[in-house]
Length: 618
Ligand SMILES: *Cc1c(COP(=O)(O)O)cnc(C)c1O
Image 1 (cartoon, rainbow, N blue to C red):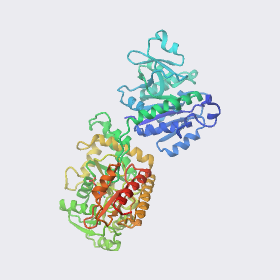
Image 2 (cartoon, rainbow, N blue to C red):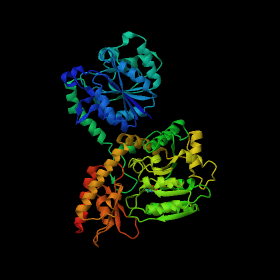
Image 3 (cartoon, rainbow, N blue to C red):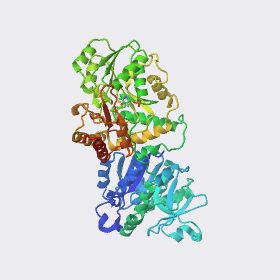
Image 4 (cartoon, rainbow, N blue to C red):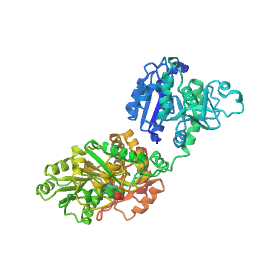
């Protein structure tokens, strides 16, 4: 897995004349997006979490870009005018931790190139293409073993006497390089001040030939890419290369199904593709560090990892609830479960299966909880623990945990929260909310694949469980936590590929941010609510108590209505909707979760309107 990329972006771009006088080349736009920004997006989609950009000429452009892309760090090459690309790589080198992609800033390329390099078994590989006739080629010569020997712009010189018979390989400007090779490149560069203006590719050839670090050329004959050094090259890129890149990439697009059900949710293609990775034994250290990284990242969305830790299991969200309820009530303790919907009832059911002493506090599924009555229950001194759902997915009702949990803590209760359909859908701070344990899953708002359930635990409360007898074996939180702390491995076989997808989903959540994700969901919800009102359909819960994540709609009062027919009508048009979950009141539910866009919600409300019209409702 390649976690880092370095983009060399210091150059003056003087051959563009006035166009790049006050702007770096990377900010030339194609189809409305700067080429370097598109490159950063491709790197994120390929699983890169840390993009280091070496800047020089007009560095402020990159600093502004880094404000919109939290994965970007910029490093300025102060001496950019007097050095070359190797000088810029040298200033970035101290941030590089392992294998990384090295890219030039002024290229457009098919993202398949990153996949090819990542999956090449060799460590140091330069991506190359066949002849482009672009006018400013850098040629590569390599032996029959693929090892790079010479590089340069003079084709005859590079290819040598056998120029006619050797295949032409052109440098693309994307390479995969290991830390050892980078260190050798630096040593060579620093060995002689006369090398100040040397290009990184020339240094790579040096290292490959004379420093026992072979660098290989991976030649992809018809690879779609273009570099931009002047107006003619830009023209060629826009007219001939960009359409090919778009076409190639469209061949990998997965047919879109928009899930408006409350989980699993719609995922991005990059999350789907993250599961396509080399097989790995989960007892390898590399996999352990992936799990540890996921745990810390999941925690950091809602808490400080110093105070909280995330314990994960291969299971659905209910598995996380079951782990939490069965593990976190002390022996001899008594649990109060708030039930104002199907998921609260499920928490109570789990507690009863484990024969945990318990009382149920019933609430209306559509009205806010009676906080005074709840406080009386806390005050009674009967309970060690509280279990409550944050967002009741049955109805879309959001329970005011910011009031309830601090109150419960004031009376000494430990708080167990089913945050499955709230986590990462809206900003939350577990400590500020007074939450000790929060359950969630990999497949709802975090937008990964189903299969990993996790509980984010306050460390001080988790440590208390050290000597408690286990109620469940597989789902015991403390044992799962202790084993991973001691060995860096999960106790049992984890859903390996689901972890790679989760990692990608975390990177994409960091990029979007939870705040903006909530704004996106709210945008979709506003479109839905406006359309429901226009159609004369009523919602079960008052708007001000709704989460914006799911909307329970009362079914229209006509015998012509059929959920199945409405579902099938929407499904044929690419949308999946969900029935209600309340026994006595007829509802259907529309969720705003996952990778859905306002434009898709616009289209959906049109479909809903057409169906309602067909049964005479509007
Ligand atoms: C989705 C959900 C769950 C878990 O459902 P699974 O099907 O087990 O993943 C639990 N609680 C709430 C509030 C939910 O929305």
